[in-house]
Every structure is written in structure tokens, then in C-alpha cells.
Image (cartoon, rainbow, N blue to C red; front, side, top):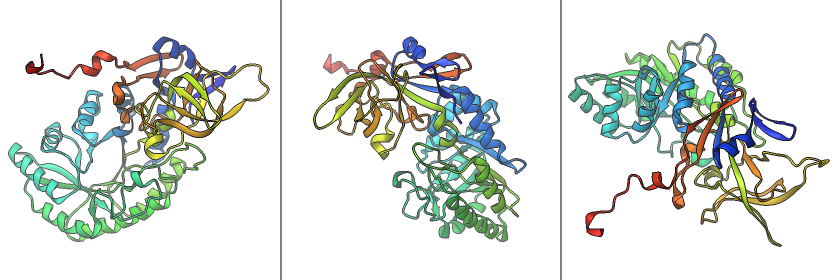
Length: 422
């Protein structure tokens, strides 16, 4: 469910015409629906009913402060993978006791920052990371709460770049080596074992990999209990997919039901790290056609958004529906053509769609790149010295700029020319 709908041939976000936002803000910009974000979070969280659980939003998928604050008011926590995401989460008002720190390469400074901030738990991914955290906790005269991310060697059946649960992936500790590390941690004076963590991938549209991974983790938790290591939290990560094209992902209630059944007999709190399933279809990227170029070989729709704004098509060959913000009035049916929708960047890989049947766009038309709320702005860059886009949030009949558009001054703000070049 989302709140991007046509009214009289104009695309609206809730009760605001997107063309009106474009006129006020300029293009390109990311646009999020408050109603959709709220509905998706509540639907996911409440699907688990009375099962003890904590929903920690995956900050990497969409890290704007306003959106993090919204999820905080709905009772959410945060799954973070960097010191910057920890800083953002706390600035947004998320209780550090509802923050889980994941990531395979936490630095010494980041470990210390998480520890002194009082986060709920670190998801440790290697024995060396454990030793480093023990050292830092000793220096701080504190005890570090930890879970270990184990790699269950489960095929998530997703794109290779977003698969994280296979033995060949860099993430986690192989499940057959994890027992030794738990026993090592048990003897450490400044480490407190709280949980077991597992995350197998992103954009999963089948429940079976989740239940297979959970079954393996459950057996492992039971084994730890026999060794005198009690587990309070089981972090199953995120990864539930959304519809971009013709995918048929399970409803969160179906997902929750399957996990709840597999959790039977475990006396620990389930931690979930949804990202894409909450924000993916709650945001779009709005762009404007700069030029059109139609040749015998190819038709090109050249827009002012590019791969630096939305990397997913270039990176994953990902599909995003491309819709007109204003439909042509008076046409019995929409006129289509096969075209590439491309940006201004000097790379052949700069495209938002290739060989796609799209509306016959003309210069000046507004374009909506749908389902861009997850891994959209957060993966954007300043490549080709392009200022990053604005972010806008709509609530009912009002819109709010939640991130100002960058400009040329902000591009060079942190750069310095040394004196010898003056």
C-alpha cells in the first residue's frame, strides 16, 4: 500500500500534487509519504503480535533524521552499521537501548562510541573484533553487551551483491566455528553475551530461506544453552522484499507467522531489522526531462536525475517503474515508446531504465521514478560534482523539506588549498 495516486491525470502524494512540489523545490528530489511510512512500519511491527520482539529499522536503507524520528515515535529502534548512523539515530531521538550495531568492519573509535553511548548490543562479526571490544571495554571500565552474527550458509535466492548469508560472503562467523568464539567470550571479564544474530540477505521474496536460517540458529541457541550460555535476544536481521516490478513478496503477517512458529520453544526476544519493506514503496524520485534524443538506433529520455542520485539501476540492473507526473489529457490511451531513461553523467552506465516501454516524454515533463525510498538517497554521491538532491516529506495536504538541496558551495565546503598553491 502506498499513497502515490493519480487524480485528474496528475500524480499526487497523499493530498499534494507532486507538480506543485516540483515548482516550489526544483528537481530532482526524493519524496516520501508520511502515511505510507507509518502504515508500513505499524503493519510490520504489529504482525508479530504478542511475540516478544523489537523492530530496529535498518538505517542504511533511508537515514534522514525526520524519517528516523517518525519511526522512533512509533516505538522503533535502529539497526546501524557505522558511527555516523549511530550519531544520526541518537540525534533523531532513538533510545540507544533500542540500537543494534551491526557491520563487519567497526573501527576502534566506532566501538568506543557505541559502548559509551549505551547501545543495546553489538553484533560481533569476527574474533578479532571481539578482542578489540574487550580491550576497549577494559579501558573504559565497562562491560560490552554482545551478540555474534553467525553465517548459516543459507542461499537467500536474491541478487549476488545483496546476498549475505552464504559461506562465501564476508559477513558473520561460520556457524561451525561460532561455538568456540562464544566460549571464548564467556570467559571475558568485560564482555556480556546477550544474543545470537543472523542476516542472510536483502530483497528476499520467499519465506523459506528465513525459516531455514532460523531453524539452524534455533539449534545453535539450544546448543549454547547446554554449554551454560543463555541467550536473551535472537536477531534475525531484515531482508523482506518489496514489489518493484512483478515480484510477489510475502505479506509481513505471513512472514511473522512463519517466524513465530519456528520460534516455538525459544525464550528470547526476537529482533528484526526491516528497511526496504518499510520505506521502499514509501518514496519516489522526481526528475524533469531536460532533452529527448530519438535516433534510428535508440530513443533517449535525458532527465536531470542520474546514477549519482539513484545507483540501483546501474549497480544491480534494478527495475523502477517510470511514470509521468502529469498524464497527457485528451488521449484515449497512453502513447508509449521504447527508450532509455538516462541522466547527465559521463558514464554509459548512467541510466534509470534501459530499453523500457515508457510514456512518450517531451522536454520539460516531470518524471516519477517509483519505489525509490530504500537505498535511494542513502547511496547517492557527488560524482561529476553534482549536488545531491533535496528530500521532501508529505503529510496530508502539506509538504516539508527534510533535507535541503546541496549547492556548489556545499560541494567544496570541506576542501582546502594548501598555502604553497596560493
